[in-house]
Image (cartoon, rainbow, N blue to C red):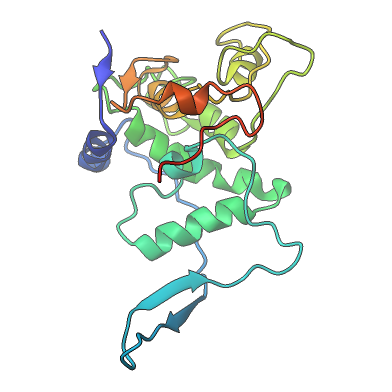
Length: 229
């Protein structure tokens, strides 16, 4: 039977697990964080001064990397996910997106820390995808290394595309296959990701959100249905 965990419940259970999570008594230090500078623009209404204040990041320099084409929700779920300080959390996620490929390994320890919490969501520690059998300090290093190398892999030699994360599953021998992998519009990537992180399965965690087939089943550009008015 599928386990229904709404996004709100996922957050609540994760925060509740902060005190223990899964693993031994050793903790791995999280990666350092940097402070980003923001600009504040004050808007005024027709009647005079006042209005509201909008806080936006600085405009990136020409040629600056601002995002990776990575796996959906991984930066959200496994990088400073449970920080109480929103500024620190946002800065860490920006650092993840801007980091050059040579620096991706620096996030492994931070990812491993969060994986220990996510593994406890179903109250069964150790059944997370690639989790070590024993509660040692390196229990989550295997999956943390895969996730820190945050790229969306596609097998161009295959013309069969039906499984999200298929290339990664084949590479780790978790699910031998010849699927093209990648991500289709109809793939529920959030449910798949949380199922792997909580229970080591490609399905089973239901975020209770039902996709509109009209917006995911397109076969002609621009593929998606127009937004609602």
